[in-house]
Length: 536
Image 1: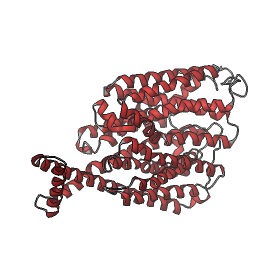
Image 2 (image 1 turned 30 degrees about the horizontal axis):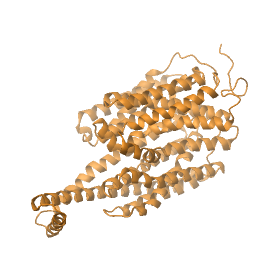
Image 3 (image 1 turned 180 degrees about the vertical axis):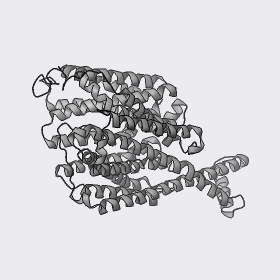
């Protein structure tokens, strides 16, 4: 009924004969790179983005969550399009659509246009990842090559935020925020030209018709994911369940997930095979991945501390984050070597989480209103090293814990857990920033009054300094009061950051105890068992 599969082994190859393997890998990764940059692009300078769109920082965070939700929700449905369309025309189609969406983001300032486009960009990113890595895995003959390519992809994903900060800091400082989308738009053009020149118009597998697309499950799943992101990002600002928008969102998630799970249990070919949750190693891997993602985004608080307390400009913050980027690269390389040596997963996780614990503890003592930026180089490198050491082995461990036939569902579950970890980390940070920061501010207000001798001395010193620089007596008193308020806000920022890092340190200690006391991990190794491993 269907034509014979067209693969790289028995028919016309996907890439033309003049394109060697190294060039194919360069083309595929060069196509991935602009899409990865688009992923966290609004977070490269969240204040500049919020100012450009006339919104608040939470809206910019939600735009990233929408991109992530589109990636997660469309992942399973995208495989049908991958099997239906020829690789060359499929690449050209979604690359052209990515250029079009970047053009829309460049020209719009309206959130009601920006948000849906970001979700659609996430869907296109799912197409890019699935097709690029699937074609790459079919060309890799050895286990070593597959694991190296897998590590490179996730290394690029981990490097997205510090890389974006470094590349876009000068651009955003010189032009409007939307210039970054113009740069992303032009970065796709060389990739598109190389694809058209180097690829044959063939399919890497059997062509399956596009009937019976499970768009219902995609819709239920995607809306639930978007609501999770909405609750986690705006929940503390709206006082959680006290606001009807949050209550309706929680109710919607419960109803949508109930319908979704009922559909999956009753369908012959479910959107996600729920039998993957029967495997103990898979569940342990998901737990570790979730915890790691919560701890991973603590570096955002450090960047906020650099900008608001130490008063470093975005360019200097991006330079400091190069140490974090170097740590990620080193961690991914070390983790890849340990996977190739088939080391036990405990010997990979333990050093990674110990490094993250060292980062959080050291930063707890390094937070201060005055500091030398050189003191933060090593902690940021340690944080990147720990994240890079944990990320790839955990995903490979989780996917390889289930049968090969369930690999796609396992990848989809890992992707969903990473999205939940991202949203929950934002929710926890927002809670500490809005609630704990205001609590500390009120505590300072209770003790700082005009009658306090220490306050009098500080204000009078600031007044004398301002008058010595030429300010009149009246305005100098008001300016000294504002400086005092800014100092109190800085102390609130410090205390909130210290509270958050203290909680993360306790969480990391609990994770280390779990890894150390879980006996089954002592004899569990991590390796790739399939040349057709699904990318997560």
